[in-house]
Length: 295
Image (cartoon, rainbow, N blue to C red):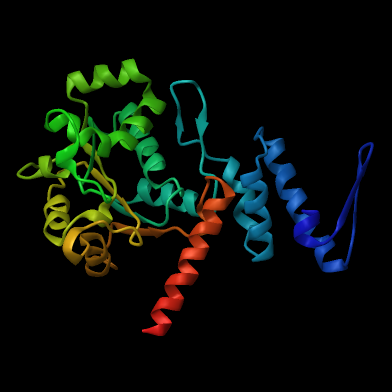
Protein backbone atom coordinates (compact mmCIF):
# COMPACT_ATOMS: atom_id res chain seq x y z
CA UNK A 1 0.00 0.00 0.00
CA UNK A 2 2.88 2.37 0.76
CA UNK A 3 4.42 1.67 -2.64
CA UNK A 4 1.13 1.89 -4.53
CA UNK A 5 -0.13 5.13 -2.97
CA UNK A 6 3.16 6.83 -2.07
CA UNK A 7 2.26 7.08 1.62
CA UNK A 8 3.89 6.14 4.91
CA UNK A 9 1.95 3.87 7.28
CA UNK A 10 2.90 3.89 10.95
CA UNK A 11 1.54 1.44 13.51
CA UNK A 12 1.94 2.08 17.22
CA UNK A 13 0.03 -0.03 19.75
CA UNK A 14 -3.61 0.03 18.58
CA UNK A 15 -3.25 3.13 16.39
CA UNK A 16 -2.52 3.32 12.68
CA UNK A 17 -1.35 6.56 11.08
CA UNK A 18 -1.18 7.28 7.35
CA UNK A 19 1.08 10.10 6.14
CA UNK A 20 0.90 11.51 2.60
CA UNK A 21 -1.20 13.75 0.37
CA UNK A 22 -4.89 13.94 1.09
CA UNK A 23 -6.20 11.86 -1.83
CA UNK A 24 -3.74 9.01 -1.36
CA UNK A 25 -4.28 8.95 2.42
CA UNK A 26 -8.03 8.70 1.73
CA UNK A 27 -7.52 5.80 -0.73
CA UNK A 28 -5.19 3.97 1.66
CA UNK A 29 -7.77 4.35 4.42
CA UNK A 30 -10.46 2.86 2.17
CA UNK A 31 -8.27 -0.15 1.39
CA UNK A 32 -7.52 -0.73 5.08
CA UNK A 33 -11.20 -0.43 6.04
CA UNK A 34 -12.21 -2.94 3.35
CA UNK A 35 -9.51 -5.38 4.42
CA UNK A 36 -10.52 -5.00 8.08
CA UNK A 37 -14.06 -5.91 7.08
CA UNK A 38 -12.76 -9.16 5.53
CA UNK A 39 -10.74 -9.93 8.65
CA UNK A 40 -13.79 -9.34 10.86
CA UNK A 41 -15.69 -11.84 8.70
CA UNK A 42 -13.05 -14.47 9.46
CA UNK A 43 -11.20 -14.23 6.15
CA UNK A 44 -7.43 -14.63 5.89
CA UNK A 45 -5.66 -11.84 4.05
CA UNK A 46 -3.55 -12.80 1.05
CA UNK A 47 -1.41 -10.78 -1.32
CA UNK A 48 -4.03 -11.41 -3.99
CA UNK A 49 -6.95 -9.84 -2.14
CA UNK A 50 -4.82 -6.90 -0.94
CA UNK A 51 -3.75 -6.16 -4.52
CA UNK A 52 -7.31 -6.64 -5.75
CA UNK A 53 -8.70 -4.23 -3.17
CA UNK A 54 -6.07 -1.62 -4.14
CA UNK A 55 -7.03 -1.91 -7.82
CA UNK A 56 -10.75 -1.51 -6.99
CA UNK A 57 -10.12 1.57 -4.85
CA UNK A 58 -7.99 3.10 -7.62
CA UNK A 59 -10.86 2.56 -10.05
CA UNK A 60 -13.55 3.75 -7.62
CA UNK A 61 -15.26 0.33 -7.71
CA UNK A 62 -14.68 -0.94 -4.17
CA UNK A 63 -18.27 -0.61 -2.92
CA UNK A 64 -18.95 -4.34 -3.48
CA UNK A 65 -15.62 -5.60 -2.12
CA UNK A 66 -16.90 -6.15 1.41
CA UNK A 67 -19.65 -8.49 0.13
CA UNK A 68 -17.13 -11.04 -1.14
CA UNK A 69 -16.94 -12.65 2.31
CA UNK A 70 -20.72 -13.14 2.44
CA UNK A 71 -21.35 -16.11 0.18
CA UNK A 72 -19.87 -19.59 0.52
CA UNK A 73 -20.80 -21.60 -2.58
CA UNK A 74 -19.31 -24.96 -1.62
CA UNK A 75 -17.34 -26.80 1.07
CA UNK A 76 -14.43 -28.96 -0.15
CA UNK A 77 -13.78 -32.51 1.00
CA UNK A 78 -11.27 -31.09 3.50
CA UNK A 79 -13.82 -28.63 4.92
CA UNK A 80 -12.47 -25.54 3.19
CA UNK A 81 -15.16 -23.02 2.17
CA UNK A 82 -15.06 -21.89 -1.46
CA UNK A 83 -16.00 -18.25 -1.95
CA UNK A 84 -15.71 -15.86 -4.90
CA UNK A 85 -12.50 -13.83 -4.57
CA UNK A 86 -13.39 -11.04 -6.99
CA UNK A 87 -16.53 -9.12 -7.93
CA UNK A 88 -16.36 -10.73 -11.38
CA UNK A 89 -16.33 -14.19 -9.81
CA UNK A 90 -19.29 -13.33 -7.57
CA UNK A 91 -21.27 -12.07 -10.57
CA UNK A 92 -20.38 -15.29 -12.43
CA UNK A 93 -21.69 -17.49 -9.58
CA UNK A 94 -24.87 -15.39 -9.36
CA UNK A 95 -25.44 -15.74 -13.12
CA UNK A 96 -25.01 -19.53 -12.90
CA UNK A 97 -27.52 -19.68 -10.05
CA UNK A 98 -30.09 -17.54 -11.89
CA UNK A 99 -29.81 -18.76 -15.51
CA UNK A 100 -30.11 -22.06 -17.36
CA UNK A 101 -27.07 -21.43 -19.58
CA UNK A 102 -24.09 -19.32 -18.52
CA UNK A 103 -20.97 -18.45 -20.49
CA UNK A 104 -17.81 -17.70 -18.50
CA UNK A 105 -15.32 -16.04 -20.82
CA UNK A 106 -11.93 -14.75 -19.78
CA UNK A 107 -8.21 -15.35 -19.30
CA UNK A 108 -6.45 -18.14 -17.45
CA UNK A 109 -6.54 -18.06 -13.66
CA UNK A 110 -9.93 -16.42 -13.24
CA UNK A 111 -11.53 -19.50 -11.67
CA UNK A 112 -14.01 -20.14 -14.50
CA UNK A 113 -13.80 -23.93 -14.36
CA UNK A 114 -13.19 -24.32 -10.62
CA UNK A 115 -16.17 -22.18 -9.62
CA UNK A 116 -18.42 -23.89 -12.19
CA UNK A 117 -17.51 -27.27 -10.69
CA UNK A 118 -18.17 -25.89 -7.18
CA UNK A 119 -21.62 -24.70 -8.28
CA UNK A 120 -22.27 -28.11 -9.87
CA UNK A 121 -21.32 -29.96 -6.67
CA UNK A 122 -23.57 -27.65 -4.63
CA UNK A 123 -26.52 -28.29 -6.97
CA UNK A 124 -25.84 -32.04 -6.83
CA UNK A 125 -25.56 -32.15 -3.03
CA UNK A 126 -28.83 -30.23 -2.66
CA UNK A 127 -30.52 -32.66 -5.12
CA UNK A 128 -31.33 -29.92 -7.65
CA UNK A 129 -29.76 -32.22 -10.28
CA UNK A 130 -29.06 -35.96 -10.43
CA UNK A 131 -25.86 -35.85 -12.47
CA UNK A 132 -22.75 -33.78 -13.05
CA UNK A 133 -21.37 -34.00 -16.57
CA UNK A 134 -18.01 -32.40 -17.36
CA UNK A 135 -16.64 -32.28 -20.87
CA UNK A 136 -14.09 -30.55 -23.03
CA UNK A 137 -12.87 -30.89 -26.62
CA UNK A 138 -9.73 -33.00 -27.05
CA UNK A 139 -7.78 -30.48 -29.10
CA UNK A 140 -4.00 -30.53 -28.98
CA UNK A 141 -2.18 -27.37 -27.88
CA UNK A 142 0.92 -27.99 -29.97
CA UNK A 143 1.01 -31.71 -29.16
CA UNK A 144 -0.32 -34.75 -31.01
CA UNK A 145 -2.88 -36.97 -29.31
CA UNK A 146 -1.75 -40.03 -31.27
CA UNK A 147 1.72 -39.96 -29.75
CA UNK A 148 0.41 -40.36 -26.20
CA UNK A 149 0.67 -43.93 -24.83
CA UNK A 150 -2.27 -46.19 -24.00
CA UNK A 151 -5.87 -46.72 -25.14
CA UNK A 152 -8.37 -43.99 -26.08
CA UNK A 153 -9.37 -43.27 -22.46
CA UNK A 154 -5.77 -42.87 -21.31
CA UNK A 155 -5.11 -40.62 -24.31
CA UNK A 156 -7.97 -38.24 -23.53
CA UNK A 157 -7.43 -38.27 -19.74
CA UNK A 158 -4.68 -35.58 -19.85
CA UNK A 159 -7.17 -33.21 -21.50
CA UNK A 160 -9.69 -33.85 -18.74
CA UNK A 161 -7.19 -33.63 -15.86
CA UNK A 162 -8.20 -30.08 -14.71
CA UNK A 163 -11.80 -31.32 -14.39
CA UNK A 164 -10.74 -34.37 -12.39
CA UNK A 165 -8.61 -32.20 -10.11
CA UNK A 166 -11.49 -29.83 -9.33
CA UNK A 167 -13.85 -32.73 -8.54
CA UNK A 168 -11.27 -34.48 -6.33
CA UNK A 169 -10.87 -31.22 -4.40
CA UNK A 170 -14.62 -30.82 -3.84
CA UNK A 171 -15.58 -34.43 -3.18
CA UNK A 172 -12.46 -36.37 -2.30
CA UNK A 173 -11.11 -39.17 -4.50
CA UNK A 174 -13.13 -42.00 -2.90
CA UNK A 175 -16.47 -40.17 -3.03
CA UNK A 176 -15.75 -39.09 -6.60
CA UNK A 177 -15.04 -42.69 -7.64
CA UNK A 178 -18.24 -43.93 -5.97
CA UNK A 179 -20.36 -41.38 -7.85
CA UNK A 180 -18.63 -42.25 -11.14
CA UNK A 181 -19.45 -45.93 -10.65
CA UNK A 182 -23.09 -45.04 -9.91
CA UNK A 183 -23.27 -42.87 -13.03
CA UNK A 184 -23.87 -39.65 -11.09
CA UNK A 185 -20.65 -38.08 -12.39
CA UNK A 186 -19.33 -38.30 -15.92
CA UNK A 187 -16.12 -36.77 -17.25
CA UNK A 188 -15.76 -37.32 -20.98
CA UNK A 189 -14.55 -35.75 -24.24
CA UNK A 190 -17.06 -33.60 -26.10
CA UNK A 191 -17.46 -36.17 -28.88
CA UNK A 192 -19.18 -38.49 -26.35
CA UNK A 193 -22.08 -36.01 -26.01
CA UNK A 194 -23.40 -36.51 -29.54
CA UNK A 195 -26.88 -38.01 -29.84
CA UNK A 196 -27.78 -37.59 -26.15
CA UNK A 197 -30.41 -35.58 -24.26
CA UNK A 198 -29.15 -34.51 -20.84
CA UNK A 199 -32.01 -34.18 -18.32
CA UNK A 200 -31.63 -33.41 -14.60
CA UNK A 201 -27.96 -32.61 -15.13
CA UNK A 202 -25.41 -29.90 -14.42
CA UNK A 203 -23.27 -29.84 -17.56
CA UNK A 204 -19.96 -27.99 -17.87
CA UNK A 205 -18.16 -27.50 -21.17
CA UNK A 206 -14.57 -26.43 -20.50
CA UNK A 207 -12.07 -24.94 -22.99
CA UNK A 208 -15.00 -24.13 -25.25
CA UNK A 209 -12.87 -21.85 -27.44
CA UNK A 210 -11.56 -25.08 -29.01
CA UNK A 211 -14.96 -26.23 -30.23
CA UNK A 212 -15.94 -25.81 -33.86
CA UNK A 213 -19.23 -24.13 -34.75
CA UNK A 214 -20.80 -27.53 -35.38
CA UNK A 215 -19.57 -28.96 -32.07
CA UNK A 216 -20.90 -25.98 -30.12
CA UNK A 217 -24.33 -26.23 -31.73
CA UNK A 218 -24.34 -29.99 -31.04
CA UNK A 219 -23.45 -29.41 -27.38
CA UNK A 220 -26.01 -26.65 -26.74
CA UNK A 221 -28.80 -28.74 -28.22
CA UNK A 222 -28.10 -31.57 -25.73
CA UNK A 223 -29.84 -29.49 -23.04
CA UNK A 224 -32.70 -31.36 -21.40
CA UNK A 225 -35.32 -30.56 -18.77
CA UNK A 226 -34.24 -29.41 -15.28
CA UNK A 227 -30.65 -28.99 -16.41
CA UNK A 228 -28.04 -26.25 -16.28
CA UNK A 229 -25.14 -25.61 -18.63
CA UNK A 230 -21.96 -23.66 -18.00
CA UNK A 231 -19.63 -23.00 -20.93
CA UNK A 232 -16.15 -21.70 -20.13
CA UNK A 233 -13.36 -20.55 -22.39
CA UNK A 234 -10.68 -18.04 -23.30
CA UNK A 235 -11.06 -16.65 -26.82
CA UNK A 236 -7.40 -15.54 -26.81
CA UNK A 237 -6.17 -19.17 -26.56
CA UNK A 238 -7.69 -20.96 -29.53
CA UNK A 239 -5.84 -24.15 -30.52
CA UNK A 240 -8.05 -25.22 -33.43
CA UNK A 241 -6.09 -26.48 -36.45
CA UNK A 242 -5.94 -24.88 -39.90
CA UNK A 243 -7.49 -21.59 -38.83
CA UNK A 244 -10.89 -23.14 -38.04
CA UNK A 245 -13.44 -20.73 -36.57
CA UNK A 246 -14.13 -21.02 -32.83
CA UNK A 247 -17.64 -22.15 -31.94
CA UNK A 248 -17.43 -20.13 -28.70
CA UNK A 249 -16.79 -16.82 -30.46
CA UNK A 250 -19.59 -17.61 -32.88
CA UNK A 251 -22.25 -18.50 -30.30
CA UNK A 252 -21.44 -15.54 -28.03
CA UNK A 253 -22.57 -13.32 -30.88
CA UNK A 254 -25.53 -15.45 -31.98
CA UNK A 255 -27.02 -16.00 -28.49
CA UNK A 256 -26.50 -12.48 -27.15
CA UNK A 257 -29.65 -11.06 -25.57
CA UNK A 258 -31.57 -14.34 -25.29
CA UNK A 259 -33.45 -14.66 -22.00
CA UNK A 260 -32.09 -17.22 -19.50
CA UNK A 261 -28.67 -17.23 -21.22
CA UNK A 262 -26.04 -15.17 -19.40
CA UNK A 263 -22.61 -14.06 -20.58
CA UNK A 264 -20.06 -13.27 -17.88
CA UNK A 265 -16.74 -11.82 -19.03
CA UNK A 266 -13.64 -11.75 -16.84
CA UNK A 267 -10.57 -9.55 -17.15
CA UNK A 268 -7.05 -9.57 -15.69
CA UNK A 269 -8.34 -8.16 -12.36
CA UNK A 270 -10.23 -11.42 -11.80
CA UNK A 271 -7.05 -13.50 -12.01
CA UNK A 272 -6.49 -15.25 -8.67
CA UNK A 273 -3.17 -16.93 -9.50
CA UNK A 274 0.28 -15.41 -9.01
CA UNK A 275 0.29 -11.62 -9.62
CA UNK A 276 2.64 -12.14 -12.61
CA UNK A 277 -0.21 -13.89 -14.43
CA UNK A 278 -2.08 -10.55 -14.44
CA UNK A 279 1.02 -8.79 -15.78
CA UNK A 280 1.50 -11.45 -18.47
CA UNK A 281 -2.13 -11.15 -19.61
CA UNK A 282 -1.91 -7.34 -19.77
CA UNK A 283 1.37 -7.54 -21.73
CA UNK A 284 -0.17 -9.90 -24.29
CA UNK A 285 -3.26 -7.68 -24.62
CA UNK A 286 -1.07 -4.63 -25.29
CA UNK A 287 0.90 -6.58 -27.87
CA UNK A 288 -2.34 -7.71 -29.56
CA UNK A 289 -3.49 -4.07 -29.78
CA UNK A 290 -0.17 -3.07 -31.39
CA UNK A 291 -0.46 -5.88 -33.97
CA UNK A 292 -4.03 -4.86 -34.81
CA UNK A 293 -2.99 -1.21 -35.13
CA UNK A 294 -0.29 -2.15 -37.65
CA UNK A 295 -2.88 -3.99 -39.72
